[in-house]
Length: 179
Image (cartoon, rainbow, N blue to C red; front, side, top):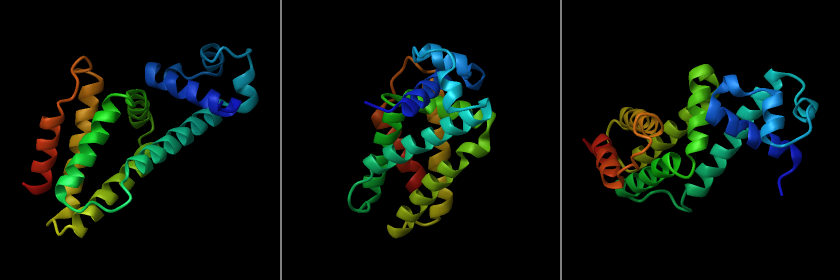
């Protein structure tokens, strides 16, 4: 059972995913979590403190997802990287769609707040590509990251009723990495 603080932050993250940052208020969190009025403000005295804590929770969850998806060994081939990225995008558009929607909300309202995670992802991909001898690894890593961002945006908005096609996603990633 999560502690009260984690419960509040998880509920708040869900509100951001569903309503954007404008929907994030102490009262809204209390109501959504079925807590007595004032509970959230006892933990987070200001809205700014609440927003910062929600961002921290999002970062923690992103790190957990990244670590759980990372194999014990470095990818041995580009196909390993393609498979890992494809699986990650499918999960971010599927079972972790709420986290992706919250991240998009923060990206629009506070881009600096999510840029560290994006840089970490891009740098990790670049290093993996360099280790495999893929030429122009930095440019290719950025292209794949941009593709993933755009794919998620469309999957969560204009194509939200269409599941991602794993084969098409893998083909596009492979083309960006090798083409």
